[in-house]
Length: 109
Length: 113
Image (cartoon, rainbow over all chains, first blue to last red; front, side):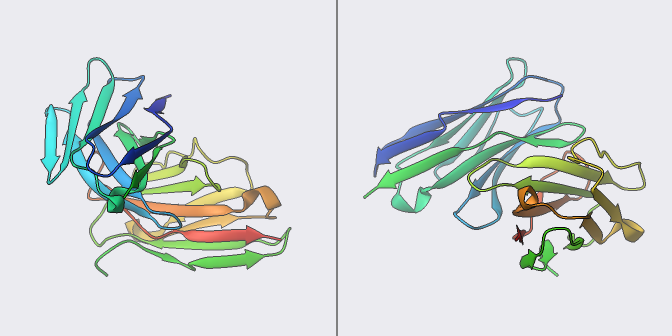
């Protein structure tokens, strides 16, 4: 069974900082990896999808990398803003889709 | 509709009653997932449908939980004889097929009193 771990569990930074969120998984036989954000009391919003043949994907201030062989992905957020405050979840997509517990990010003005 | 639709958005039920939660996936999406998210917790996988294949039920927590998907589209998650520990947000997602980008509904918040 795929196990997905996200570190750190929580992170608080001042506005403007660059930051890295980590996701690791135990079974490297995956198709894709997807990053989501979840605002309190809301559903999940897709941020980036990295296919297993790709090493990274970029959208605006977000950059996600994937190293399938080592079972790791990182989400890099540049020039963080208070509006980035949310819980960030990674989902590993193999025969099904399994989630980490998330990183709760707070960006202070 | 344009996105994944779940109904009801909120449900309060008495302990011991049965409930049905509905998910309308994006039209044409063959993969459909159900998850449960308890307060302050991550997403717990429940069940996964892909086309006409047998569903992956490995995440269902007990035999009180069941799900079906009619005509490869709408899915219903049924919880029988609800217990207080069933209180959570139930989330549904769909994707065009396995391994492609998944999209989530807004969830159904179930409260068992």
